[in-house]
Image (tube, rainbow, N blue to C red; front, side, top):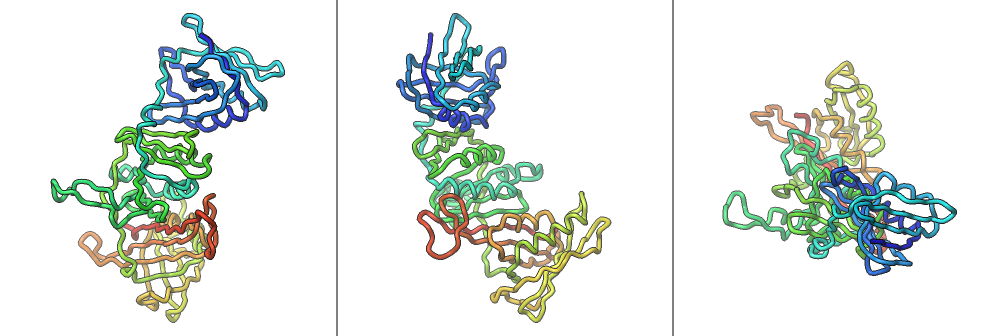
Length: 432
């Protein structure tokens, strides 16, 4: 058995780049690891990589083809091809139980490498072809939303519920059985249409835009890094396909790049977002000044401490300052610099003083990735309860911006074609 073909090095390396984030799973008695090539129809080659939970495929044009089939190439050696720029000819052969791949990139380089039996390879092409399309997205906008969400999920929080490891896009038409009314269907995300949501059980993240409306999407946090890497190599729209409860696939528009993962997510129970008219304090805050004050307190508190008091000092109700006071450790009692903020005209009681304890790390996450120079900080005061006799507060920032098809922020006004308005809410409670 022999398979002969040639491929331009640039096309081969592009395909390798698309799949190599997935380290191939060991197969056979020798625990061999390899990428698999499939040569079909004389003019198209496919490169595959699979591990226990993920799969990837990239296609590339080939020429001078004789024969077709599948062969394996050793994982540890795949990086050698990046040093070539012209055509590379390949010959995959089998003699008895021995497999080998010879390649010739010209200039007297190349040679023959031992390979292994490709019987361990199983293509996911049929399942991919039968999968149902569930959404089409601007790749850069989806990538940005997922990237901003990654510090809010609960994958590494042992106290978080299973669904907190899921980043999920809400679709108003999604139906499931009402857990409070067995046998009846209801729509738990009806008021959250177009929202990408993540939560670690304490903090929450909401990314809303029209490009997400009417579409369902969910991914477990453990797969997020690989998906972000895939989306970073894609231009234009991406298509999400679902193979039932087994696998979710994301492809570029022509299907030449594919990434898939096992669907083991547990969905969030519902969409919940309390109304803006509940907030008692609304401030316009300069992001950089706030991050400087929080960064200073982070250095002074040191490791193992995160409790600070947020103090709002009004100045006649028109303007004022926010300051932080260390509430624990050797830095207890130390103060940050003052941050000049402006109460929003809709603030119910702008002259009222506010003091509440907050987790410094959580508060930093509310400002860290804000797109604009200023952001709205909104505070809702909670009533005393048996568990919290002093009451508390709920804090959120609301960041509004426009993204173009490249994922770049564009100023308001006449937006370029394909640009979308995005609203991001980052939420946290006061210190527990």
